[in-house]
Amino acid sequence: MSYRKILKELRKTFPQPVSDKIHDSYFVHSIMSALNQVDDLKTRLPFLGDIVPADFDVAKTTELPECMSTVEEVTTELVGYLRGMTIFGHPRTQQNVIGPTTIPSLIGVLLASLHNPNMGWDEYSRLVAYAEVETVGITSQLVGYNPEHSGGVFTFGGTGTTLYGVKIGLEKACPETIKKGTPEDVVVFVSDTAHYCATNITGWLGIGTDNLITIPTTVENEIDLGKLEESIREVLKDGKKIAAIIATMGTTDAFGLDDLRQIVAMRDTFVEEFELDYKPHIHADAVIGWAWSVFKDYDFEENPLEFRPRTIRALAGACRRIQHLQLADSIGIDFHKTGFTPYISSLILVKNQGDLDMLKRSPEQMPYLYHYGQYRPGMYTLETSRSGTGPLAALANLRLFGQEGLRAILGHIVEMTQLLREHLGGHEGTTVLNSANYGTVTLFRAYPIGVDTFEIKKQEFEDASYRESLLVHNEYNRDVFQYVNTEAMEGRGVFISTTDCYRHTTYGEPIVALKSYILSPFVDEGDVKQVVEKVLEAREKIGEIVNTDENE
Ligand SMILES: *Cc1c(COP(=O)(O)O)cnc(C)c1O
Image (cartoon, rainbow, N blue to C red; front, top):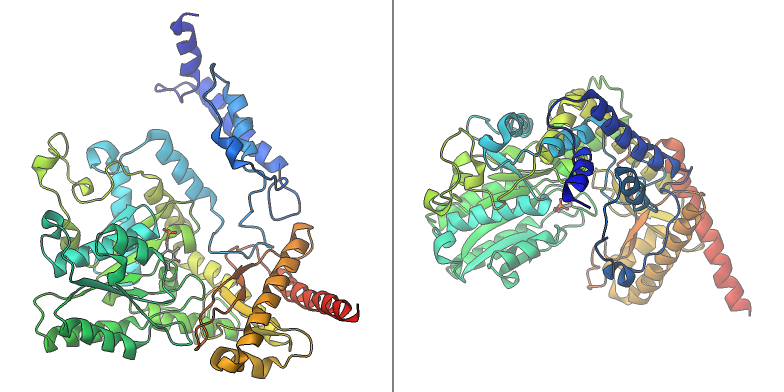
């Protein structure tokens, strides 16, 4: 067959470069057909279709087909890959910090993908670049940065935002490392409940994971300020440099919030005391916590949105720390976590645009780019090609929600979380572990019937003579998790998750916990009650199994 015949077919598979209404409706129809097929996979259960086991070795043997397929065929095949996917917006999904996505943010992704702006340069992205700058402006003001001085770019995830923060700090502490390489005597500080991306980043930046200093946390999952101070002093006395102090503003597992204000004050005192010729960079990993900024000037007394008193307390509790975000030198923000956009939509914000400029390459290294135009982030971004999907999705949701919408949606999921805790607290068999953390994640433990939960929690966490008991109950909680999720698979109850190590005990053993992460606006009181009911039911069932074992 002449290639020309194939080409004719091929051209129909692209959106048309010149207006063609008939073809447009074919395009829309194709999308609609995909959506209809996805809809057919929906049942009452919190996942699409059936959970099908996959043989990844077989996947490896897949080959390129010889001939073309049609748009319809490919669509149906692609939809098939969604089988078994968790529906993260389902009211009975409370698994992790993965949120459902709004229609405008999906349209943002579609539009950016449709015309493929490359965000390196406004020459290739025009007003989509403008949208990125608008988003930087909105977010700067939200967290309290002065937009006249601040700057920011979207990057490849929350991990990317921390990478930027540490890289900037490294360049400040050890000028010209971009040119000369990383010296050995430089460290990064982070808490022991922070995200593991800090390990990746120190590894990949050549700082070395041995130079990542992990500071213990208090029982509130906040960095221990006394220990941080001790450790910084030691490092400075040894003549080492500090590339960055990472303050976690919302830990992944427990929503612990570091005391950023104190960390900044401590940094400033050390700069004076040791007469440092640089200011150790403070990066706020607020990829989860940033969204709470909308409550900074909420009138908690008047409470116009009519949240319950417990919710008010939780929102104010988080705000107490989040309101100081503007003290950080840089901030990481994930719209794909608490901003309800699709992956990837992550923004690194810097208080001073000059910090990003430090990462610039010289124009001679990029001879074919950036001759004109007003917006050229490609001169300092790690990425070369950079997608417009993140900025358009983020801007879509910021516009859609406004302050009011973000308050309502966050307030609701915090309210549901507080309700869950209230119910968990109302039973002798269950106990909440992170009750001092006011996010939407709840870590809790269940204990067998007959165990005094008031005493045991403290004993197991602080007294090494309870090691056996802790380990037995770690296993017990794994069993409870299995039971609850097996039931959820059958359409009874709610999907939750578990963590192998909520924290370590004072004597170094990991504490296993059950975990509910509420991120769906569809969750309501009934769904929350079901979690508790299922856990209590598991207690009865597991209790029975243990008893019959003993009888035999
Ligand atoms: C999720 C998370 C990260 C990593 O972000 P990605 O977007 O998954 O790369 C970093 N820090 C914290 C606190 C997180 O919760």
